[in-house]
Amino acid sequence: MTSQANKQDKIALTPKTHTTPPAKFSHGVKKGNILQVAGQVGFLPAEEGKPPTPAGPTLREQTLQTFANVRSILEEGGATWDDVMMIRVYLTDVAHFAELNEIYNQYFEDQQLTAPPAARTTVYVGLPAGLLIEIDALAVLS
Image 1 (tube, rainbow, N blue to C red):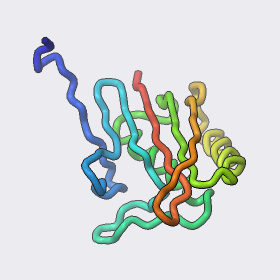
Image 2 (image 1 turned 60 degrees about the vertical axis):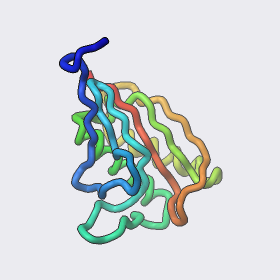
Image 3 (image 1 turned 180 degrees about the vertical axis):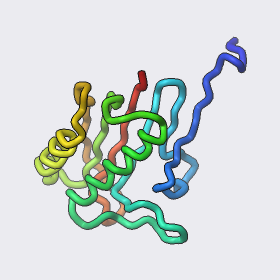
């Protein structure tokens, strides 16, 4: 049996830009060198006393805000996009796949990654009305 002193703590990550999750989960968790970002959507940064609001009605607006939300959790845990091993993208409409790839490619070109890009899976799901995309990420820190 492992002693308590040898166990690494699992830390919840909630950046200032995020509201408290609506259910019993964390926006991100870190244990040792593993950081998991929960599925994020394109909500604008949290404003005290106001409900979350989508960045806009377009896939581009929501995708760029979703990336910003994922990135804020990565940074809260001491990670960057270079540490990300896996990205899962959840789209509500198969017709958005080509546009997503254009936005995705440009975004990561702008990030000037120094490591190979993460693996990616894209799946199609239902999301609450008005939301077009959700993204989660798994990072391994050096």
